[in-house]
Image (cartoon, rainbow, N blue to C red):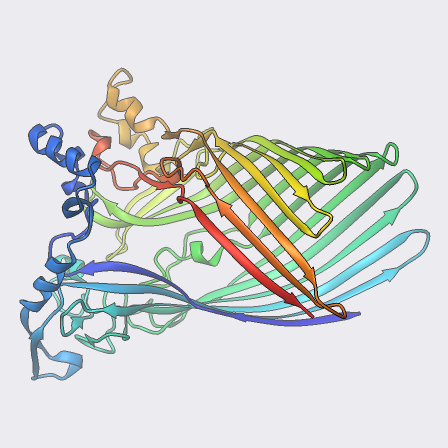
Length: 551
């Protein structure tokens, strides 16, 4: 019997620019890019294109001086600051700020494990697990950029509503004056309680091994709001209704020992799991409204493996299959057709992952090791999900049960073909050095679901170029990297060791390799290039070093 208690806490922060009644400061804002002027102002587009290709920092970088100057000159009077009716505050109100999106998780758990030999090579392993998770989510003022204060109101709500209360992000702090380090905008917790138990039965024999397993779990989650939002005063403060999901899973596998060096194994599993709490709420920053008809996700998976084991050669070939059904996909973005910031939720999202993997390692003359791995597969959407679109600030239902034609589209965001080849030298004097060549291909950007609808192409015919521009996937070219690594170990005395490890990645400094990205959710059906994809590129040459002392 083994009992394990654990705890984890931390902080995650992502910074972002925000602005109030001011021009967008981002260099890649669509109106500042060549694609915006290509048709109507080609000469301006040519100049902009030259600025970007030559790296003109006046165009490609944020003009921080301009942001500070705008804040220095913005003398402003705030009525009823911090709810003090009849008073006012005069000072430089920041037009531009740097804010932090904070997520501070806390996780505590208890595991009890029990293992027993039953008889005749049968073994039982079982256990129970309790986990309490809380994620504190809020926005923090990082830098006023030369201004004296920020007012915690929603400028889009000021545009959409005639009353001043609707624009308040926290009705408990009317016209809340924000200084550096203050929490503002939103403040809520996501609570998740999980209870599960499992039992596995393993058996072994001279010709085959096997196992079967069962898992039962219950997941409860809810939102706790710490601000009363002016747009949703009855759905933002306090605890939401608790959501409960009972789930189960079964798994099994067999290992056939053809000989001592040739093995075949087959594994399979079917399980259900609770929807992710971060996708369950339509817009958790402002309210506790849930995605309609939430259900558990279903997973069916299996694999078959052939393994070879010799003193100098180890290899394995695997074929795998995984079908994940009934998922939720949720995003928020500005929708040009509706002239509104919207919450876009897809339900009944099914995905299929299937492919093969090959791994091999060969030792030559006891000091040289050749290794290689290769994988190829198809990772696709396997059905046509349904989408619901609501206005973020009003919860107005814009579209419901819209069919998304994603079936057979690549999921994107990952290579569907990858390989690596390595060579390593192990010295008898306790040092080693090696090199790896890595290749990635068949990469696509994740598709924007709203572009794969009848509505997106309703104004075109099949022969129009806009038809294919709207529906085609965005493909990326393949690429490779070369990495070096090495290390050494020293035995000091009485079981004490000093170890050094060093690695250098992408030694060719290949920074033109696009490793991923995404199609912008905001798009113009008649001019897809106006909101071009965002790409991520391979880091240049990077290095890492580590020294460890064992005693």
